[in-house]
Length: 433
Picture (cartoon, helix red, strand yellow):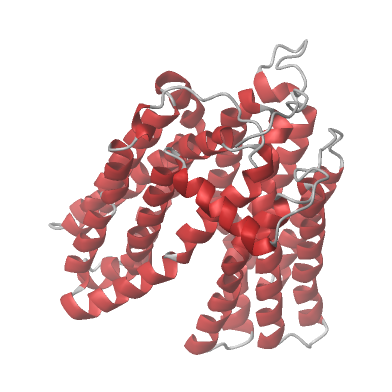
């Protein structure tokens, strides 16, 4: 079933003469973290600016915007292939070259605008190619972290990365909006291009050697390797319920996200500025939850942390369809739902993500990441479509009730599984065969 292989060398000592604990004393992780933090920030600016380039500068229609969004998400089908790649080849070179590739692609758009040749075809091609590189980067990045920090620091590494994600989600669009008053939307894309360059250089400066995850043996066929990763997750007593919980949340949670603005505007009669206020609380909660996640994991364990965070964060979404009464009460209920969901989501993600990394042998990290991402994200468009059909058939408020009740399924899956009682991280497994 499994062959004994030497454990990877441990990372540098957990503390230095400065007295700073954990990964603060690991310079290679700090390089990765710094590069990723800036890259996440730049990507949020692009998420804000790229649609504006299409709408304001190129007069895109609704159909063209739909095509642009579809092309940006189409590479999600490559997650399983990216997982096989990450389990056959060293992950850090993949991260470096996909960062440099995205730097070039994003940088071409402002150059094309200033040259007077930018059109929607440029956006379509760049969105598709950046999406492809992003899929391979994400899988390689998540598969690389455990070998870089060592099993004893996986939770801390995930928590620090989650803090950067939350801060970027809040500050990136805000900075983009501020810069838009001075620069064109196309010019803002330079921020993202530079951030990818910085991230690639930071990864290239990491000195810790990386072993080839697949070893020197003969690799199985691509589809056989993909199937082995899926079966490994499905047969694992802890992996399977986590996968089901995440997939169910994507199915129903995506519907809530898709219909939220329309519901708040047409059913609750909130102004655009008040809708923006309620959504801002999501980012505030995410920053709070990210800073608390490691402390919660250490206090109660990864399984209970994931269960209670999921249960509380998902249950509070019922406040969204229940919102009624005077305007201040409706805004308050929506804001409470957003801030509590934002605070609990990072705790759940760090808990389940760290547990997944601990449970997975090095030569399966890429395929396990890809299985979780590919299968869960694959249901997101289905959830969006279902929410639209329900909204047209039964109305927006009843639809939001159906979706909010649907997101109660993930904590039930976790509750009736061994995950909820997993209070300690297991010993790192040997390589799977």
